[in-house]
Length: 340
Image (cartoon, rainbow, N blue to C red; front, top):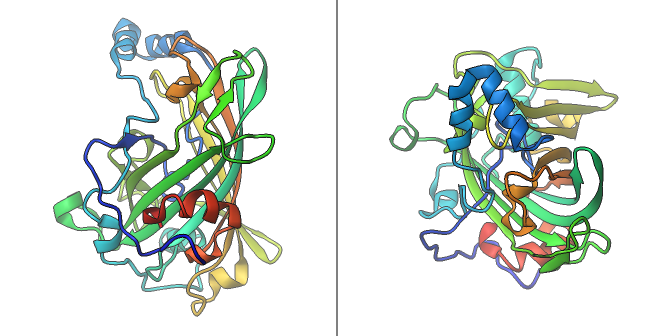
């Protein structure tokens, strides 16, 4: 394939930042990443209910989450390339009722147990809505996760149980006209009539995934901060000759950007998941989620506005850049080869 080199590198600069969201591995949140069905006043009411005036004051003083400034945009020290790949001692014959086996099956379905870098290209459409009236089809998205499971180090992450996997994650997205699904740099907000100046959406994040399930989202523990010692199995169900993994994140604690939710599922060939000699299994992916519209600064909203973005996405897991769909090769890989 011409036009990009999967091995090319980028000279990274300080001060580049973007978004946030719970990971598809650790908490399985996803693209839209977050949900809010209520305006700011409801968040304040929730805080007041749980913490009285002190709780309400804490919400009012909280720094507002902004999807384009709250997360690093790039790895600055070559972490995706310099870390030691993480491999599992068992690659099949899983007992899904056993927490350790369940976690390995989840990692095989969503990532890889043999140290391979994997890619999750996705296509999505967003609907901008108000909680009390109809909304409007607003954006399309061509996006991709790049994941690498690595061996974590105590120097970087402190204490963790033996067998913990570190997931390095890059998210890259280009916005599309939702009617043509072609790249655009500006679109009209059909609810306000104002033009939105769009920016490509990129961030990086790290997750520690514990042997018995659960994880910690390094840098944003609010979204994934499970106990390393408590077993946490993921729902995986037989569906004919396939397995479906269900996971999501629902957050209702007080905060300017609460409540939120995402729901994800991964569908894989059951025989491949259970076969220890099948090193990496293909997967189909689906996501539903929502986030407050003001978390995207180009939407033109403030925390007093009730609008939110609802997202529906389809994706798949592939094991090389050559397997990416043509649209992702064109609008993502050729534009950002360093994110492979």
